[in-house]
Length: 184
Image (cartoon, rainbow, N blue to C red; front, side, top):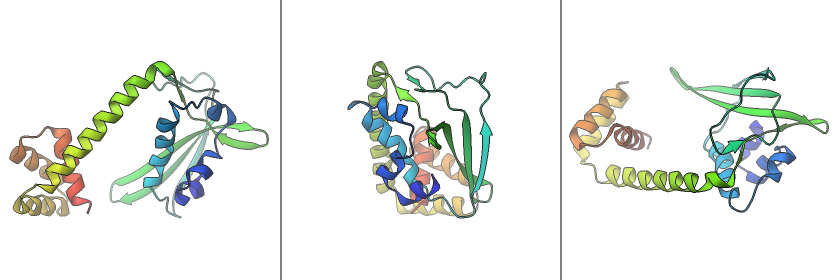
């Protein structure tokens, strides 16, 4: 799994999936499914990652909300953890089931009635990302310098509040803008 994520190869990544997961893909659900897998490619799992496996008790509820369900119940979960900085880290969780002599990842499948809601949410995210990009691009250099300084001092929350005060933007947008300008 780590090698497939680090290889950034969707075909290799899909080869690790349980056949029942692949069977639930339709032309309508495939883009959301592939986007979910490709989203993991924004990470590169370092060699010093930590791996933890756990059995999932049969009575533990596995809920992802309305409109999505597992095509079969996973029996185990693995947690891949690594640190990205002081007090910061990433955890990827994969659900597994044993199939024909090997472990396969189990992902929830999307019901057709959930698709319009998912498409609307995807469009809203796209519009939000465009707005954040526009706000970051048009930000006065003096404000950008002040925010970058606050983040460099370990005061990210103060930077977000300062941008929110100066721009009048909501908290979510302010956070996204500050993260965008300080990630470059």
